[in-house]
Length: 325
Image (tube, rainbow, N blue to C red):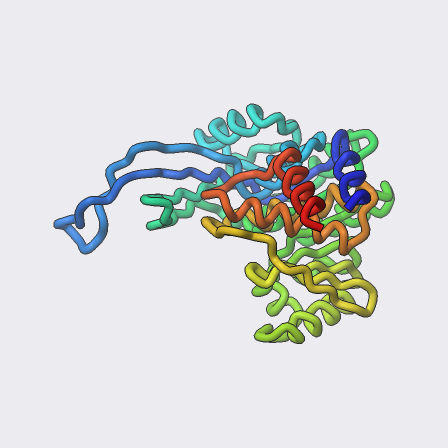
């Protein structure tokens, strides 16, 4: 555990860039006390609204909360939602100079309606057409302008920011710059991820990417080994209540979940990839990094909505574990 504390001390000041699909998460909170006379649906009396940076922006938010200097690269439309997103991201301390606008696209927004801590409905506004080549080149130029970058995270939600050509350019940039490349993948783009440093699929994504249906513990092992052989990359499968599965050489190590209460799993993967990346760039091995990320995920799912885990929260949770040992 002493080693983990040393790793956490090294989080502060790490320089990490996040590129991917930026989403504006809108939450509408309200009370339900009747059914609509127009249709068999609840009538929500709105009590509050809030906007939170989501998708790749949520990864960036987690990195900032954990002490990293964070650069966010992505695409928005030229619309009101872009302005709202920028305002929220700037308040969090994220460097947004790598966010480009495209008049042909609209800013992705997910609106969730919540009552009594339960999500009643989600409405998505999105345009998943792929970005054009001049925007790909602009991203690479931005990355090259950042001095002493420690890692790059690709947060692929398959909304059009990550293209095949851009992924190839990102891999070359990271190889030439000798920086860690971590990808939170989408199976739709699985053929693009070969030879990255780390892939972090969830159970469903691991099934689709490996072709192995996962039902039992052994299936996670087989899927993980097949993925690391196929992609020549490190593999950590996030498995919800089952925790995580880390491919460590020819072995697969299971790390049990630490979650005490589960209110909302949305955004947990973003928290995991942020902690994994910082831990690996701060001297942790794969298993130790996964243990730390697992603790962070346990904290995140105890929070409602898109939320971050701070350095202080993770440190306190790990200290509690140390005292129990």
